[in-house]
Length: 337
Image 1 (cartoon, rainbow, N blue to C red):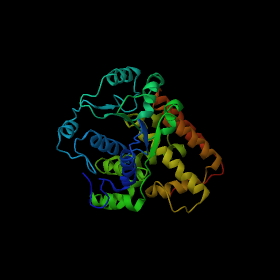
Image 2 (image 1 turned 30 degrees about the vertical axis):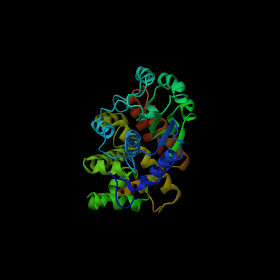
Image 3 (image 1 turned 120 degrees about the vertical axis):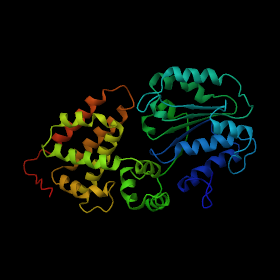
Image 4 (image 1 turned 180 degrees about the vertical axis):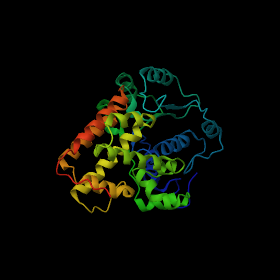
C-alpha cells in the first residue's frame, strides 16, 4: 500500500498520515475529525487507509491486509465501517440518511473494536441533517470515530465545524506533484493538467484520462466571446448546460484569480492557467481590479450555492450576464491577435 520513499501511496500525504498515527499512539484519537483540503488531493484515500488500520486485527504501520477485518473492509462489507455521501454529485446529504446512521450507531460494534464513519463531501449536509448530527458528533459512542471530509470547510455549518478537530491537507509543491504525475505517464501534458486541476495531483491524473482539457480551452474561447460581445451570455449558458456546473464555476474562479494576478502584476510568473496566458493578458486590459474582486466573490457564492437547492441553469446565466457587463469600458483595447 505504501511507497519506499514516504510510506504512504501519495508522498504529499505523509505528514497528515503521521499525525493520524500520532493521535492513535497517544490514545487521543478525536471522535470527530474534519479532514479538509482541495478536491483531488487524496482525502478519501487517507481516511479509508486509516479506517482500515483501525479495523485491522494486526496493524503495524498500515493494516495487515490479511486478517478477517481487512478482508471485510477491502470487500466493502465490514459492518463497523460506514460511509455517508450524497446520492449524486451536487445533491445534499439528507436528514433521513443521518437518522439512519444515528440508529445504526445506537447498536454496539459487531466486531467489538472501532466503528468508523466517513462523511464524504460533509459540506453537503443540509441544515436538517447537520442539526440532527450535532449530538452524535459530541457523543458518538465508545470507540466510534467520525471522519468528515470536505474541500469547502467554510460551507460547513458553524455548529458542525466547532465540534470537530481539524486536519488540513496542503497542496504539494508543484515540483513534487509534477514529478509524481510524470511517474504515472502524463508526459508533456503534466503542466497543463496540473493547471486545469488547480494543482491537485489526483484530479490532474483523472483529467489525463478525459477530454476535459480541450473542453476547458473551448469554454475559455467562448467565455472570451461573451466579453467581446460576439456571443450572448444566455446562448452560451444554454450551450454549457451539457457540462458539469461545478467544473464550469471552478474554471471561472481560476480564470478570475489569474486575471486579478495579471491586473496586479502584468508579468506574473504564476498562473493557474499558464496555457491561457495570452488570452488572459488580452482580457485584463479592460477589467478593473475592484470589479474582478467583486466578480470573484460572486463566483465563490455560486460555488457554495451549487451544494444546495438552486436553479443551476439560472445561476449560470446570471454569472455570464455579470461577466458580459464586467468590462464594458469604451476605451478598452480588445486586440486578441
